[in-house]
Image (tube, rainbow, N blue to C red; front, side, top):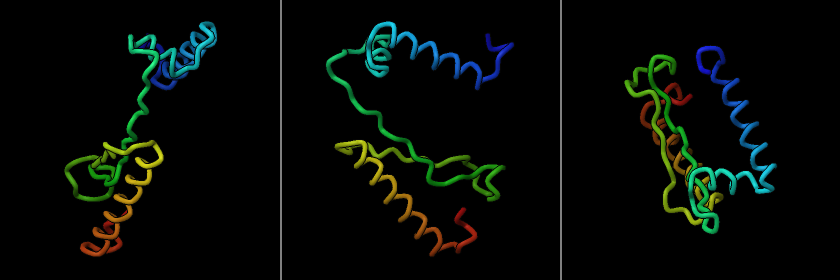
Length: 107
């Protein structure tokens, strides 16, 4: 119950219960989660990583109104390719920002 437990405790309990259910069903965790979600068990798709490339808002120490700018490397053929795509965008964006606004604009 949310009123008595914090988010970290709720997450830890949820993860433990999910892992226990997978173990009791003798299924890998990803397959068990798909089954719980009513998804097909014969066709799995790797999630697309979401990457935070620019921070803003009151806690970032800059004047950006938006708190986060995120990218999702949709269209990658593998998780590794998605990570490479995201890293390349991040580093190129950092170079562009540094060139235009100076080192202080890069965290």
